[in-house]
Length: 303
Image (cartoon, rainbow, N blue to C red):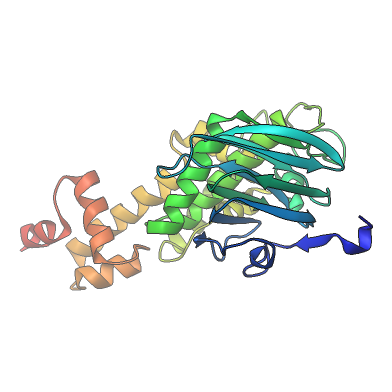
């Protein structure tokens, strides 16, 4: 098949693969930077040759109602492989690589599409060379970490909770470093941050967090203040503070909520919004878990 006839799938666009598959996706993420999740349930099918504009990880999800294993063929860059796919298996499909496949039975599967720039961004502090090459993999292996990331991101799409943006940012960093370690032709280099974050940098990060507690704080924003990659920022912050940025933000929000409950006449719903919780019920759940009483009880105790 000539290059001109190869279809392109760009998961930056809505319903990117629907025209090539028998059925549309049953679940799709929205608004994540550098990352996109789709979940499909398909009958026996074959997809024509295509290329992805983003790196793609395909995952035969663990799901009841579908065969525990199935057979099919996959072509990666013209190379054919006969696959016996078990639930939980993954395939790696680098951006720009010609690909097609077929399945001999009904199946549920998910894909994670990530921008190549994400690997460059995360890898800038830990690998040599400007060109990071993702190695293609047929769907014939299990990867517990990737499976966990798929499950967590799927849950976030289905029932998103407080701190979702920060959770997704953290998982993006985890995903990228895992790919760099296991599925890329890269060589590690020594970190240039052996002394950790400076006290001035740490102070700037903390001040930024406290000034923006009512917003959707993202790991990439915090790491930009420190002028290092999100991966190294996450590691160094936890090393120096003792908890992750996500945990620190949650603790800070609870402390601000405690102060406002004690020293203001704001309603609990208003306090929830001012401290970055999505609504009063989210604040109540987190507050009860961390403080031991509900905000309502705390407010009554003040009187």
